[in-house]
Amino acid sequence: MLANQRKHLILEQLQAEGQVLSKNLSHRFDVSEDTIRRDLRELAADGHLQRVHGGALPSSSAVATFSERKSLKTDAKMKIARKGAELISSGQVVMIDGGTTTSELIACLADDLRITVVTHSPSIALGLVDKPFIEVILIGGRLYKHSIVTVGAAAIEGIGNIHADIFFMGVTGVHPEAGLTTGDYEEACIKRAFSGRAAETVVLASPEKINTASSFVIGDLGLINTVVIDGDTDESWVNSIEARGITVIKA
Image 1 (tube, rainbow, N blue to C red):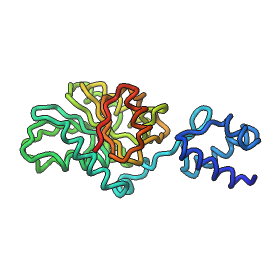
Image 2: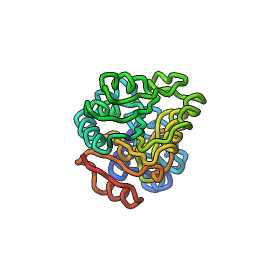
Image 3: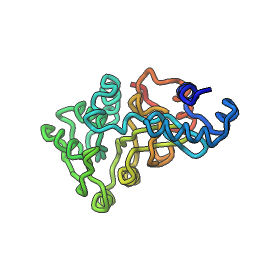
Image 4: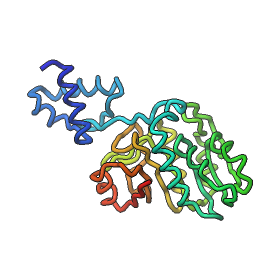
């Protein structure tokens, strides 16, 4: 079998099963594990999968630039954002991560809602300028231009001075085994810091983030309390998430 044929079948299996194991692929194709690892390396270099110890997981398309991500699954993001907005109550301190789905979230907030929003995203802060009763605390730090958020020691220090009711965490992947992942190391650190200062952590998971993984781990699924998803999400994935004690809300 030619290498390209083998890679095509690997991707088919990955799509069908949500993960592949190098040892099993070696037996299936009757080739060495070194050959399979080379296939996975090349597929990962082309952005088709995320390599992990012992195999690979689907790669998230949510690691694209902010402008590119704005065009991904827009209808689903709007539905998920509207449902997420229902979790916010007047008087709360709400931490909101940067991202395209959280940008949709703030657009769903009522004009008369009285909350305090804490964010490290200048875009989120500017999006709330016309909400007269929403106070905004903008966390400072070094601007990470890919996601248009602040990161670094100053951001971590600012986050550590706040107790919040709820945190809306942005991720690039939600996977039952790989947990919560993102495409940048410092962003992962910031997200953990935010979650540690909130009574409840919510992920708004648009379809391209479901059952995928990126390079940097934010934490396992126990870090969050709730995930809001599109109503068409595969039921077996939903069951695997609920089995870990996480509330799944369908938009």
